[in-house]
Image 1 (cartoon, one colour):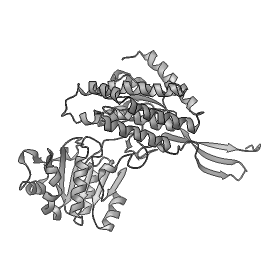
Image 2: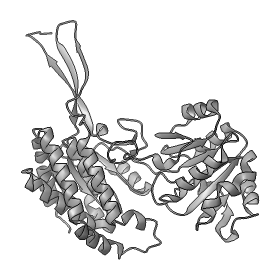
Image 3: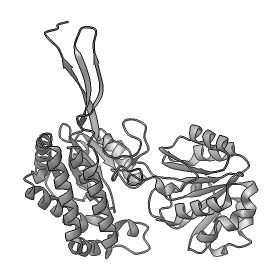
Length: 419
């Protein structure tokens, strides 16, 4: 449903006003509201799934976004559990970060406060609507949600459930606003000074680039994930096989899934073992020359191609991956430095010194040692859920839970001091 510029401005004003009222809610009311929201997600699963099917019907099943768009009973139960988890987490709002008495006798405190109005732009991920509302509400932030057209039916139903929950709890439903999905409205949102405090884009690199280049409000980037797993010459091959297959196959469509396997040349004889689970699936592999030669003895030629710079720079979000052969840990880290996106990187090794060197040098928001990149997730970090995974370095980095949705203010208490 399209809106005029004036209607959209009026909606932003209402959301900003609603954000002020959130400051006065007590903890019990916030927790109860989120628990009721979780209950409604489960009670209205049939409604959500019915609307989700309308969205799915417009998308080809071989589209990498199809799995991200899909909601079913199990996924909705998991989302409801995440909402309940968020309700039980301690809110960082009002935490005293720093407290001291100045030489002039003034009592100085630095205290966490909500950001205010948080806007999130996302594509075919209807679960984001529920996650963002839960995390924002827990930290007393209002939210402006802009989902893509692919998930609009699902998002509308989710918003209705959010508004029903808020109304039942005596809270203004204006603290959660769903933007029209048409791209023509984005410039107004990205320029809504004094009404929206920050914008967080989640999605393709093209979307993130568009927001960064066109926003005049603050932006927290959640960049693409070009993810690597390096199998060192000191790796345990059994661990490597499990980690690589889990990183690639668990959910190929998500941003923490494996894109490039980097393998030490001494481990090439074990490549068949490492890829045993992957070879049973329809995974297309782009390999450099040494790996291509090794794969040619057992891997389906129809799913095998030569790697190049473009493939190494690709976030696949599906059943595709690269293999890069190196002769040292430094070579592996140089490759990651060249092609990594700062999202998630992993090493498999039994050498503690190499693991320590890898974690020191690799510049990514999450660095794994002997575990799957699939763990790069707010729920797995026990954050309850996540707004997104930030790949920048200012304000927030990695999976963003409650704390990154706050800023701080200085409070000074004196007794008549003047300067």
